[in-house]
Structures are given as C-alpha cells and as structure tokens.
Image (cartoon, rainbow, N blue to C red; front, side, top):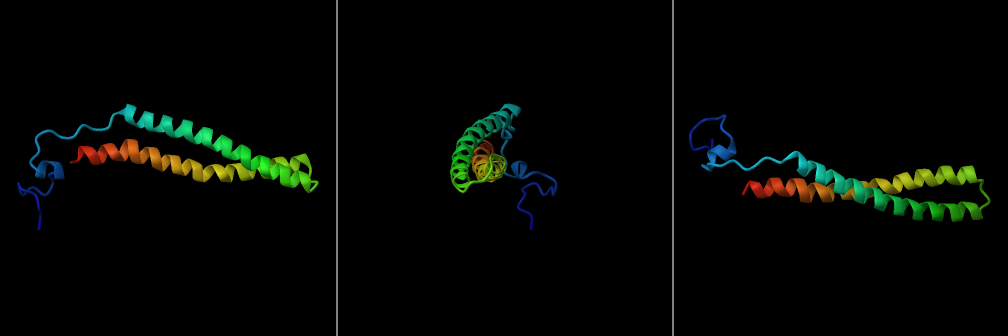
Length: 108
C-alpha cells in the first residue's frame, strides 16, 4: 500500500510529505569545496606517509646492499600502496561530512 497522500504513484516523497518548499539542491560549489579539501588533505598526508614508507624501505634495502634503482622502484610501489587507504579515508570523511551531511540535513 502506498503511503502517499494524494494517491499519485509518481509523486516524490517530498510532495507526499506535504512540505511546500523543496530542500535546496546542492550547488556546484559544495562539490568543489569537498573535492578541494579531499585533494589537499589526501595529497599532503599521502606525501608524508609515502616519505616515511620510502625512508624505511630505503633504509632496509640499502642496508641489505640493494641498488638505488631497486630501492627507488620498491619505494615507489610501497608509497603508492600506502597512499591508497589514506585517499579512501579522506574521501569518505569529506564526502560524508560535506555532501551526504547536507543531503541528510535538508531532508528533515
């Protein structure tokens, strides 16, 4: 059974709730600010995490007598892998707070 008051199966939940003013849609600036915060934080945190991981790998492989090309290659791979969860965490953080949070709050 439909919970819509006017019986129209094509009306939106907003219309069915009886509210007169629809919630304002997200603006392009909302998406841009979320992306900018994500990009800056993920880049800076990924840089530092990659630098630490690269330093540890360089120390270990350098102590083992590996060539600089081997150290560079392994450090790049490890730094990239280290940056993936950091990027994901910041993506979830900023999209959750700056995009989803506004959608949920305007629906109340």
